[in-house]
Length: 261
Image (tube, rainbow, N blue to C red; front, side, top):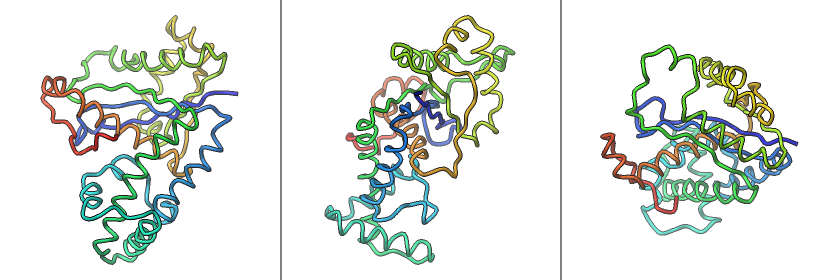
């Protein structure tokens, strides 16, 4: 059996996030299907319905948006049954372009926060691991041929951590890319391939990490879209916990995230 490293990125547009994050979730293949099932159960437990039914994607910018915290704090905490009932009302009205009432906004905001907290508990239950490279968004790419042709050092370290995790277990590791990103960022894929075929350490680590690009679809079950949630959460985590680094690079942290995250 193999470990699967589902890779995604966040903050590369340099709009709202103070960091660029590339990384994702490592999950053993034997746990994959159970994880898929448990994620679907969690989604229904939080919202009362599967969100893809309403073309809603579970990702960080959706669950941890500032307005979700504002909605959630508009009144008392709802019990599970009431929250699910009013979430369904919120989603149904949204699909009809009708305006939800206050309690429906509150229920949906609270459901998003419950879902966000529960995702990490679900990952722990299935012994998933999170590996990521985090770089301040203000760092400029060198205008050299090497910067275009070779894998960035922080990403080499990312692959090194993945290798060090799977090698002692005598397991094989796969790299699973978002197919949208793979088509849009072919240069990154080429850099990965060059690393595993043209460098001594890369060739050695290819004994455990299969240097072949695999991809997952944006149309796949919603649980893999939580990769963007994890990436977005990491940008907020570093931003809120390292104020000195933030000041050094002239960026503001995302202080809207609850310390529970």
